[in-house]
Structure formats: C-alpha cells, structure tokens
Image (cartoon, helix red, strand yellow):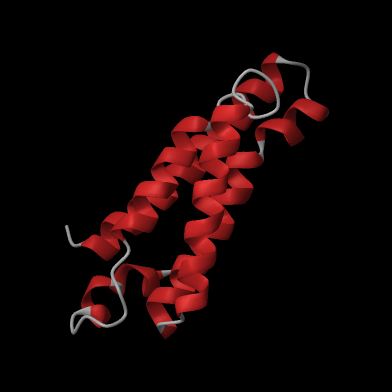
Length: 121
C-alpha cells in the first residue's frame, strides 16, 4: 500500500472510530450533550481528510500545513483533556497524526499515483 492510500485509510479509520465512540458514548451516557462531546473525533477527522485531499489533488502546501497543525493540536488536546472533555479522543488523534506524516509531498513524481485514493471520494 502506498503512502497516499495509507493516509486515506488511517483518516477514514479515525472517522469510523469517532462514529463508533459517539454512538456508544451517546447512548451510554444519555445522549444530548454526550453526542456533541464525543463527536470531536468525527469533526476533526473530516476536517483533516478534506485538507489532506486538497493537498493531494492540488498540491496546496497550505492545506498540508493546516492539516498537520490541526492533527498535532488535536493530539495535545486529547492528552490534556483525556479525563474530561476529550475522553476517548486519543486513538483517533494518533491515527490522524500518522496519516499526516504518511501523506506524500507534492514534489515527488509519483504524486498522481500515491494520492490516487483521494480522487475516489
């Protein structure tokens, strides 16, 4: 599996984990605010996915920097708020950081091949 497809897969897995966490925690803790609280991994995964897709399809470096910044800040947030507001977010945050690290650079000749998974969406 090339790096672009691995980054795509990790980002989708982080979003799927977030959906599962939201469904489980929302029903286990009474819904309402619990859904909003545990939806953080879904929202951040979607944002990072869109930014990485923009980076892969257009070569926009700003979107890559934004995705990296968001992923690292979310990882820090998931560690600092692990026992309160960011409970359960660490696995998704770790997957997103790895996805950003595996996203290929637009300078490589194989950019069209390694980011091909992002064009499927």
